[in-house]
Length: 292
Ligand SMILES: Nc1ncnc2c1ncn2[C@@H]1O[C@H](COP(=O)(O)OP(=O)(O)OP(=O)(O)O)[C@@H](O)[C@H]1O
Ligand SMILES: O=P(O)(O)OC[C@H]1O[C@H](OP(=O)(O)OP(=O)(O)O)[C@H](O)[C@@H]1O
Ligand SMILES: [Mg+2]
Image (cartoon, rainbow, N blue to C red; front, side):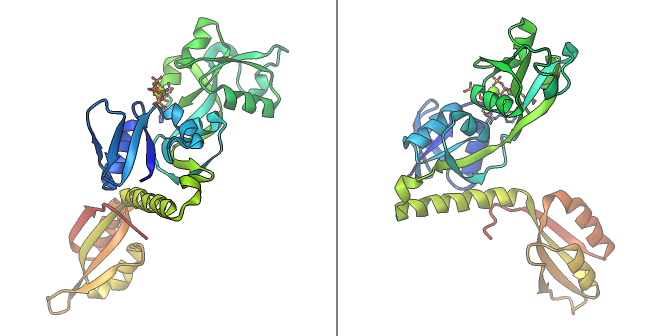
């Protein structure tokens, strides 16, 4: 049985739990604060800090992990990503005080002095400024980096952002993106347990299950009755995965039923196009899983 390290709290924990639930791998823990649990009887879960997961997976304390790619990079450990889980989307950015006069990376250290950078990501930050040839002194903090410029302990920050509201609230201006991040399913380079075929199969099944849930989230299953005469136009509106399935209905041949998997993003337009073609009895449902 593979052991999977999952974030115990913070930004990624809720979405992780929901994804595993949707894949039929509910967390069955023995209590609210339990450190280990069963995932649907198929896997053993350990709940640890997202920051620690890259180390635990690289060291073999867990076979698989869910964590942010920002944390994987910062750990400096080489891990293999098997799946982008689609949540925890954020960017690691360089930001300066609105009134600092720093508008671009080139302004940093322009006065000949190393700029002080407060960050929870010292390794990524050093590598980034080195690659850009800008002199900086990294001030490592364990959180709330955005306050540092106001306290006079740093000139700029390298911090995570998604909506931008924290930067704005702290009077900081974004200068440049260092990296984009999201939560991934990761293993060691020589994972699951050194390529043992049955463990590898377990991992592949997990990737398929989680991937099928993620894929299904962006899709809807659409059913409609459309005039047989309009079928060619309907086909153009409903590309679906492999075009619509066309089913005879007992109405003396004037209508046929079409079923298709369509993108959730464009469902609004699809429905109005189908109605314009004489479609009726349109029914849209969510899809739990989509295994290609
Ligand atoms: N604003 C955000 N939007 C989306 N994802 C984010 C955001 N901030 C952080 N993340 C992602 O979530 C990961 C964990 O962040 P989280 O805030 O849970 O850590 P933390 O607060 O340092 O942890 P802890 O709660 O254990 O102290 C980050 O490394 C990043 O991948
Ligand atoms: O661009 P925004 O949407 O404002 O998000 C950015 C904030 O989110 C994260 O902190 P989080 O809220 O996880 O709190 P934390 O400082 O306790 O980690 C990050 O460290 C930023 O402070
Ligand atoms: Mg946080």
